[in-house]
Length: 137
Ligand SMILES: Cc1cc2nc3c(=O)[nH]c(=O)nc-3n(C[C@H](O)[C@H](O)[C@H](O)COP(=O)(O)OP(=O)(O)OC[C@H]3O[C@@H](n4cnc5c(N)ncnc54)[C@H](O)[C@@H]3O)c2cc1C
Image (tube, rainbow, N blue to C red; front, side):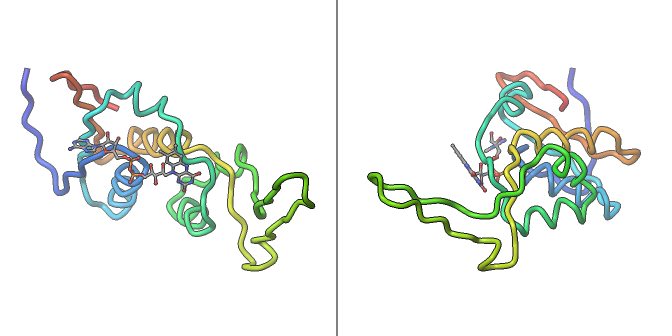
């Protein structure tokens, strides 16, 4: 059955960028709908990014999505280069830049933005469309 929907903004793609944009628009009183071509199961099971830059960590806090990241994420101060038994070289990004990254899965960001959308009082909807099936996130 077809349903007509009116919205102010249509966002193509329910990855972290699309869902976060939808969340930020909602916080500013702007309705949106996120259209995703993959199934909800696929999107939520897709493992990709694991380390967040400092700017992303700050943004998630600013838009009210930082609590789970603080609980489950692991601060990531830098990276080590190890090669053929030579002494390990640690690049201390926190010391050099004053900012720390965060080890925190992209799937968790997808989940918190999806749940934030769901708890909205105003309409902010995510829809997965795959094989002509419509699946509300
Ligand atoms: C293996 C791997 C490891 C990674 N590790 C890191 C990491 O450690 N740190 C880091 O910062 N980044 C990492 N990345 C990159 C990170 O995953 C991406 O930058 C991030 O997913 C981009 O988010 P996005 O929402 O812009 O795009 P995507 O996550 O790609 O989401 C786009 C969505 O749009 C949907 N879509 C596309 N076209 C259409 C259409 N026409 N109609 C409807 N839906 C559509 C897609 O199905 C998809 O769900 C990694 C990526 C990969 C592949």
